Length: 125
Image (cartoon, rainbow, N blue to C red; front, side):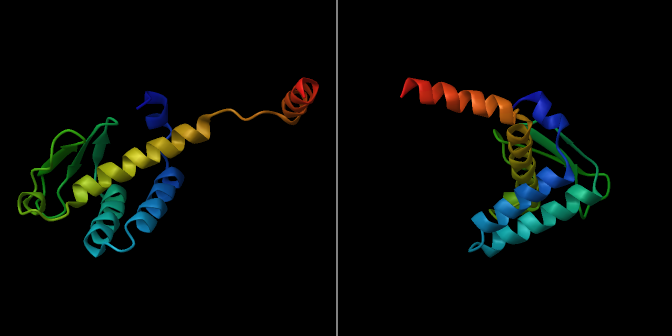
């Protein structure tokens, strides 16, 4: 994941990721619950995100931090008991938000550039 996309994470890109996740998992109530908890905790708790790894404080145990990554499961009780973990849902939301931010950074053609490209295509055909 590009470092520049991480610096462009915002409430807007995270909100877009949240909307996408709610649509994707609309029929999975456990995942929707985890996604909703994750969204709240990303606002309320301190966290660090590197692109592949998220460290975030526990909702229930003050001073406890959990680290979850795309390569290793969370060590929280929910994950240990085979339930959906909101920590992992938070990681997924941030990764999706970073992807949304990366797409938004791609430069668009100006009207003049578009007109020139269309004219070049017209010349070909």
